[in-house]
Amino acid sequence: MLLSDAPFDPWAWLGQFEKTLPPGKAGACAAFVGSLRDFNDGEEVQEMFLEHYPGMTERELEKLLTEARRRWPLLDARIVHRVGRVQPGETLVLAAAWSTHRGPACDACRFLIEELKRRAPLWKRESLSGASQRWVSGNSDGYAAV
Amino acid sequence: MLLSDAPFDPWAWLGQFEKTLPPGKAGACAAFVGSLRDFNDGEEVQEMFLEHYPGMTERELEKLLTEARRRWPLLDARIVHRVGRVQPGETLVLAAAWSTHRGPACDACRFLIEELKRRAPLWKRESLSGASQRWVSGNSDGYAAV
Amino acid sequence: MSIRVRYFASLRETMGRAEESLAAEGLDTVAGVWKAVNRGLPMPANLLCAVNMEYARPETPVKDGDEVGFFPPVTGG
Amino acid sequence: MSIRVRYFASLRETMGRAEESLAAEGLDTVAGVWKAVNRGLPMPANLLCAVNMEYARPETPVKDGDEVGFFPPVTGG
Image (tube, rainbow over all chains, first blue to last red; front, side, top):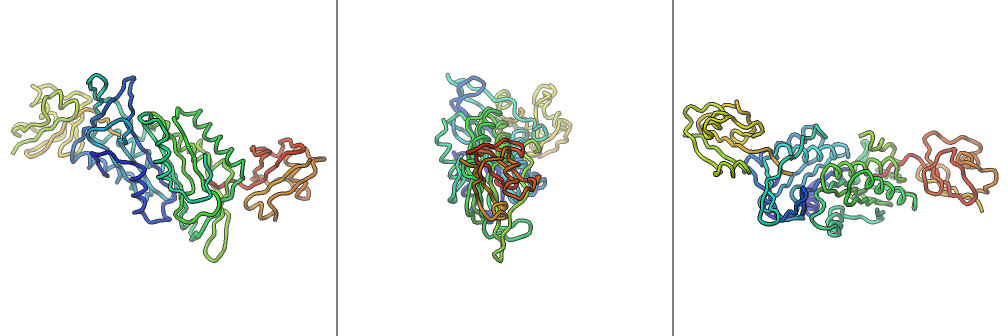
């Protein structure tokens, strides 16, 4: 689990991270990357501020990873989430799961992103054109609803 | 759709490919990477040969991508598959889907990998220790069974 | 000692402050803490809360030295 | 003209050849092509087939100039 207040390249991060896994063991990796769009609900988004609860956010993300590792036979699972000011096109979140087979990898990755959206204390505020701002509402009903 | 007879780095490929997409439009990317394990069904795998049906394999993979784009609102979808001789640890397949939202991206990516395994004319032959070889059997019941 | 109360996101803006400290006397639950800083009003139904950085409920007990967080539905990911 | 018949993977090894060419006379379906190269035996139930690189069935018609492919269940991905 990592919170990053600077932009990061999710694909470069995955490439680097995989070098730390034992080669030839993980037959499957499923990854999800969420990025900031430059439009939302019909409005142009100029910037986003991602607020979090320092301490609790990390704890909740670690809990999700622990739960995923308990629920599926994973070789590893990771989450990287941006916090602070984010520009359109930048990565907001990366979730990834490695397993021997594709089923657990895909299911665990989906679990991580759905439950992260349901549980992790993070809040998005969009800066729209004309200096107006709005807090984003609505998120996910969790993995059970998928 | 791309068939590669040389090793490729799936994360570097995704990073490069995303540069060709319009920035700030795809809020979600789901990716699956399958790699050759150095063990299977209790046996050590020393090498794999991936046979395909030149012409038909490409056609079937393109059909899968067309079907995914028709079924979900995707910004793009790609498949890269290795053919020929593959060493343990190397990537066998990459499937990825980009969309505005995570639901279509995740569902389409899962569809691509499951249906690829069910339909694409590709066959794996494992080289085990002691110069013995075996054709892999069994694969996927398709996306509908997930 | 006392109870540290923290607010996040739109609630932080509505409250006009990110945190405050309350004397713990007479406060036994999360809902009680909320009432103490909101002129006796009950907690809104969709408001989330945490005690010592663990998700809690209005009836979760609080004690001297605890940290209580209040925040709107989360929107990360 | 004639019909080009191709074999893949374990079937290619079993047949001992990757492809062959058959005179089209008397061949009207995929199953007929199979019988013509296998001493009249029916197609195994789990064998897959294609005509001109499109998935086909034993009863799919074939004609002069077609390519017919036979192969075991696929195992890519």
